[in-house]
Structure formats: C-alpha cells, structure tokens
Amino acid sequence: MKRKIAIIGGGAAGFFAAANLDSSLYDISIFEQNTDVLQKVKISGGGRCNVTHACFDPKELVRFYPRGNKELVSVFSKFQPGDTMAWFEEHGVPLKIETDGRVFPESNSSQSIIDALYSNALKKGIAVNTKVSVKDIIPKEEGYIVETSKGEFLADIIIYTTGSSPKGMKLLAKLGHKMVSPVPSLFTFNVKDELLDGLSGTSFPDVKVKIPNLKSSENGALLITHWGLSGPAVLKLSAWEAVRLAEVDYQFDVEINFLNITYQEAESYFLDFKEKHSKKTIGQSKIFPTTQRFWNRVLELNRVNKDKQLANISSKEMGMILETLCRKLFRVNGKSTFKEEFVTAGGVDLKEINFKTMASKCLSNFYIAGEVLNIDAVTGGFNFQACWSEAYLISEALNSKSYHEKEGA
Image (cartoon, rainbow, N blue to C red):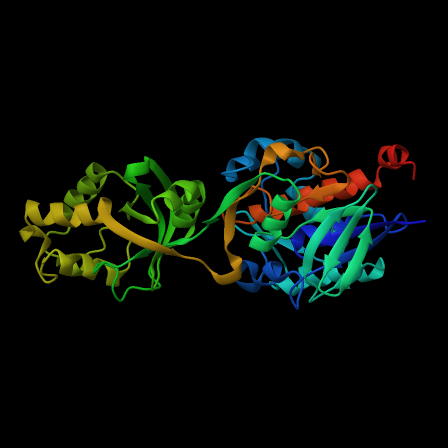
C-alpha cells in the first residue's frame, strides 16, 4: 500500500518536492489555502519569474544568503542552479541567462514555470487542493492527522512549505519547533527629500549605499521611486540588515554616493573637465554619468546658476555639488514592500533541521523547506534556488532505498 504524503503549502518548494517524488511509492496531496497555487512564482521578476541565478559554485552561491549561508553549502553541493536549469529544460521550459546572471524562461512569462510544475503534478496523479486551510496537525503514534477547513486528512509523512505565513509559523511553534521572529527583508527605503521630488523613475547604474550607524554598505544600481529609494543596492542592504533595521523601527540615516567614486576622484574629474571646457555652461556640462533632470536638480538645490560658465564656478559651489553627489545623507522613515513578492527573515531555527534531508529534528517523518525556514537571500533568483534545492533533497530522501528499508516499506 502506498504511504500518504501531505504537502502543506502550494508554492515553489511544495510543488518542486511533489514533482520529484516517486508517485509509484506515495499518494501525494498538496494543500493550499489560497485560490491559486504558485502565487509568488507568478509575480516574481515582474511576471517573468526569476527562476535562479547563474552561480554554479556552492561556496560562491551561499554568499548571497544573509541567513542560512553555512547550512546551504551542503544543500547546494547536492542540487545547485545548474541542476535547476537542467530540470526545467528537461520539462519543456527553455531558459536564458541575462547579463547580470539572473535566469528567466525564454518565454519571459512565469506561466511557463507554473505550467511545467502544475502539469507534472497532474501527470503523476497528485491531488492539488486549493482553498483548503490547514487548521491543525496532530502527531499520532504513526503519522499525523491534518485538520483542514474541509475535514480531516490522514498522512504518514508531512512536507511543510507554507512560506512566511504567520499562521503557518504559529502552527510549527505549537508542534514544538523553536521559531526566530520574522521580520521583512528586501524592502525599499521610504525617504522624503527635496532632491528626490519629481524624479521618480530616475536610475543610477552604480552607486554606494551606506548606513553609517551600522557600518554597512552595498554597491549596485539605485532607483528613485515615489516612496524614496529602491533598486538592487537598497534591496541587498535591506536583506543583510533586516534584523537590525527592524530593531530601530526603520528610522535611520542612509548615505548615498551617486557616483560610487571617492570625493577626491570626483573633484579631480570636475577640475579636469572645467579646465578643458571652461566656456561651457555648467547646466550643459556632462561631467558625471547622471540624467540631465537629476543634474539640474543638484544645481538648483545648491543655488548654482545652470547658465554660469564653468570657468566662473567657485570652489565653494563645486564643493556643494560634490557633497550632494558623493556624500548625500537621507533620513529613512519606514519601508515599503512589493505586496506578495516580499521576503522575510526569520522562521524555523536552523539548528532544528537536518540539512542532509531537510527533516525536522523535533518530529518524525516531517520535512520543512522554503521561506518558513530562517533562510533568505538577496534579490536575483536566490530565494527560489533555496526552495528548489531544499525540496529536491526532501524528495531524494523519501525516494531512497535506505528510507524504505528503515521504514519497513
């Protein structure tokens, strides 16, 4: 007789575990409380689904994970981005690597990923139950009773992949797992500053973002939004400092170097340009790689007449411009997240997981993967890769001969 597996949560980790389980050995049921499964997959990457990242060395890969980096070395040694790419290619989804290393389906549609996972589940006879809320999980001498909004379900094995749902975390705590309190990660900085007014949509290819009080910084692209500051540099910094920024209630100072060069280097560029183009007006001068709108705003706020010739720009005026470009201090007052796309730091304490199989050390025949663990990454496909890898380890463990010999199956 087939043993019964209940997968709690119909997201990336839950479906990938199901996709790789041997359905000749198991009756598999997925329980998802929402109307649709794979919701984060659908909205990821602006609807294109950033499947993974083209980083194939586990020791390099774990550097993108603020929490869980030590534990994931062994996980990625068994299943890494190259394996993920091969899996989706084999299941009819051609992928492409973009110049920044992010991996997307060639279709540029997350639906390609969803279809591959969902159709695979249906082919294997996996029961996909939507709009079913799991209210409780009761351990029995052998197996579990899963109490749902649509009645009881008996399971021999639980695979728990609820994501960052507070209800899901609360249920694990009730079952005896130690939980690290969740806090948001990957968020934008809410800033009100006259330098940013009216410049929403303006981007910078390479800046340095620093939080002086935390002695932390990140380099990368920056985007001015209606709320303040976003883009990869800000999102990476929010991930690495998620816990400490929560502790200060998202009230802090951030310093932006829009040029990502030292003040002295910027001064040298300015003086050199001034000497070579002394008759140009400063408003027409393309001294640094910024947009014209941003450059005009910098001049306006520092009360520098844009029609003034470079030859007549004083040392004081130059100093004010360079201070704004290289050392601009902003006050952050809160954060913004992108609806369902946000990520959390926190979840199951990693000491309670066997990272060879993703099995719980507190509960027998109980496996945990995905964002419900205290593992998170910076933006770029890394969070999904953790889900794929952890889920694959679960399926490998349950499909293994040694597992069935141990269970007498």
